[in-house]
Image 1 (cartoon, rainbow, N blue to C red):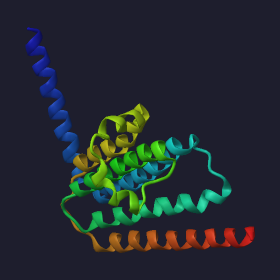
Image 2 (tube, rainbow, N blue to C red; image 1 turned 180 degrees about the vertical axis):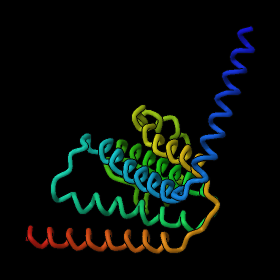
Image 3 (cartoon, rainbow, N blue to C red; image 1 turned 90 degrees about the vertical axis):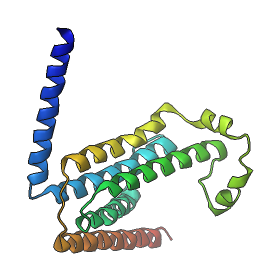
Image 4 (cartoon, rainbow, N blue to C red; image 1 turned 90 degrees about the horizontal axis):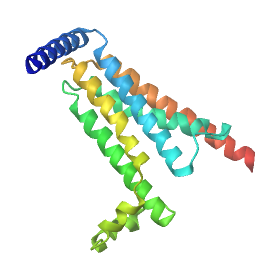
Length: 194
């Protein structure tokens, strides 16, 4: 009796989920939704990384342009979602970003610097070090995977098999314009400090 109720509830939930996915995928704005969520998730990973490294979410006014640069990087990568029919690569990029950020955090806690080219060339000397790496891993580091989970759900819900060139060029140009403007603002701030 209890098993039947569980099966019925699971079946009803599966039907509801399938219906929601069909409605979301049929939306005219499925690609825009996926692009927006991916951009925000990359931006949030950058903000969370800053919090985990420096211990604060607080940014000074001088950091405003650097926040825009982080947003423009996510937008630049997300603009390519308008060119492809399959969006699973967004999940892969988000996972790579999350794991790279986690590696950077662990390395920073161990050495007080970020990973650099020399560190990567010395990766062969990692014999027996893996046990000590986990000492520097903290539970909140795993929060960096949360935006990837959200991206995965949105990509699954808003599966849109269409390619659109106009939104691709608009988002690509917007990301480049934001990046150029932010770089110019940083240059102006640096000149004013001299």
